Image (cartoon, rainbow, N blue to C red; front, side, top):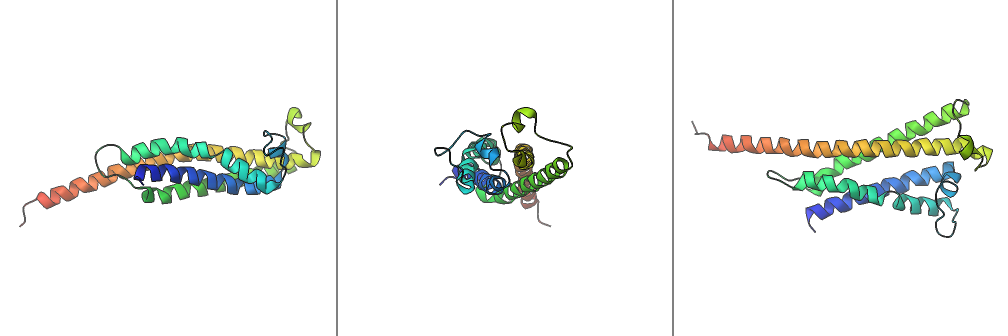
Length: 185
């Protein structure tokens, strides 16, 4: 399997893994976020696990694919040392961790603000769900929006890291060539 293909598969798998884990939590906070504000799946399934698995894959695989394209180009194309899929495990892992922390902070912020009455769903949203589900809806919405934002900007940061890492390795390679070509004293 080529390294480029491995990077693509790894990016898609990481996006799906994050999406499923994230949705396993958020389906249990507010089921209506998935049953009222998403199109029905599997004939109108309402099981939180089924919804989390379905939306965790459906809403994320393509994001992983899109982010894999610049990652592959930056890691594999052009002169100089190339990065392999294994070189991207740590930065992608950090990205997933930052997304999780950002989502947690956003969800907690929504819970605090919503509990205090400082925020509430707009009237168009509020009338579509039970009153007791509205706080959970806000928590889910904020957590998901944070995941999207951190994922987008974090994905760009990973791409910048790939570019930087290759330049660093290329510089080290040039130094090693110069040192080996220098006359021995």
